[in-house]
Length: 468
Image (tube, rainbow, N blue to C red; front, top):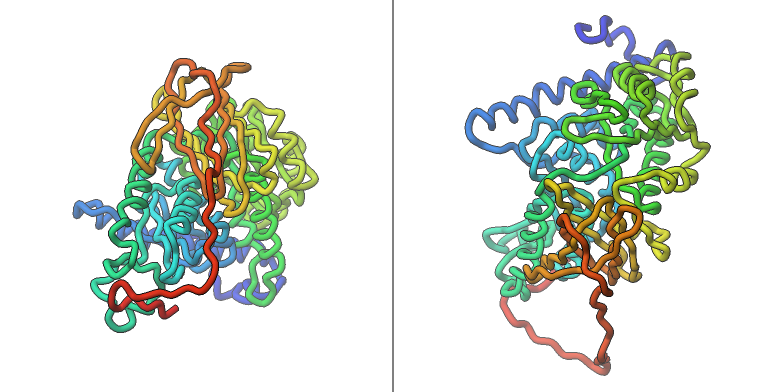
């Protein structure tokens, strides 16, 4: 009542049925739930840790979709009050946590939090290889994670622990003596990808308020539609190889401001704002976008367009949306963005599925670029153009070696070609100067030994039988 001016008891049926001013009631309810959860849980723990010389980290529950994260109202506002914002990655898969990683990494970059944690390799079983671990880890690091928290390191394998939700990082593993190979790889990546600020041109509004306004446990269809359209949109960004970050509306109200033709959120300045297919936006977001457009900022809106502000039909939205670039569908996004002078341009003719992820950071007058091929079957070659003139270094996270990398100069950009084998990756550091000419080193298969016939095996150590 103090926040919204009415007693929710009088409007409880509107949370379930489409009666009265149900969209406003639902939005008020979920926004209040989120704010109360943040203030009475996350912020209190954060303040206590700050006062006692500790750093608050971990992850929230079910962050992976717009509907599932309703268990905390909305997950992104909580990350403001974590010293090391974190997430959870489960199972031997990657894309199921795409939104999860983008949410946490966006807030961390915007609010200047150096580290982003992921609990990783849980529920993968005991069998994952180093390739599996690299595949999952590279995916997360390309999206903005830079600190792996292993699931799990038990004291022993007694009792339930042996059959727990591995991967188990333990001396009983047959690869234990070689574990440092993969750990040093990610340690070096963690160092490189925690420096500076991620370089991103595009901010996509997070449409959780549209879910708040329409979600009903009796009929989830409208909220599900928002989620599905949003998931398709953010996946489309990977197919057209344009990096983006997410803007939570509650955080935009606190940290968003217009500076010339840029919309600034915390320490990050965006030149393009995308309104996803949605029903609603908050009043604070509307005011921010109106100012941004009046200053000449580029806003792209994708149908269906929002018609509500704070859960109430708002004809004034028509004036704003009449001054932005409106697209009929997600498929038009690539042609629009390809015509713009983005800070990083990627050409990847063979990668129409969006297998290759690219993470670029600005570190003083230099750049750090990490590229990862998330496909386990396809090889891709990409050509990347970085705005500015740079000499290029190849930093090998596997060995720690640094060497010159060839490139070329064209139209004020430094261009590099990178060949990525399945689960392959490349870490480049670009410093002011000019690249050396030539072609990057390529590898060919010299020979192959095929194994056939009957097999026999013996146990190397006790207590390592897989019980998945």
